[in-house]
Length: 214
Image 1 (cartoon, rainbow, N blue to C red):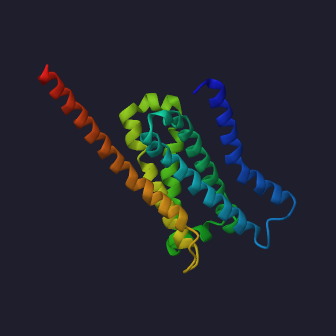
Image 2 (tube, helix red, strand yellow):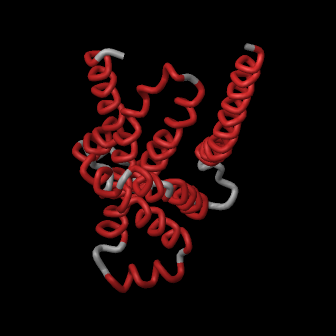
């Protein structure tokens, strides 16, 4: 992929990722957030945080499907940072608009509301990932260390999904699509790695046979 095409795709990715935030700002300015503006902000930012986190997790499995899609790796960090961006707004909405910066409200919620606990765990796991997303951090940690640390993203996504399910009312199935997608991605990664190893072993065996025949 040439540089101009890559830049164009990144511009469209930025636009797509910022679209939900832009819409929220527009609705806030025009007072069209609905009867419960705080809930609308929390739901929109929380959903998009999870969506973009899951999209970032989809990059590697999709790349493994075809070597031609290797360029997708250039979008994984961008999607992950936007997930953190929306997660931060989601948390800020709770702290500022729900808890009103009241420490006693926070202490009550963190001990009595399990969806709050799951949400804080998910965000806490995202913080070191966002903090080490730079090229400098990768060079300091080393490739293996960086990869080990960034496996936390799976636990963050799982905690985020649990937070979503525990937040909605019983019988509400809105988290189902994201849950199925995340489950499929988590299952696909080890399966595809196993298939790659088998292909590598077969190729090595064929190579040995070819040499023996000579």
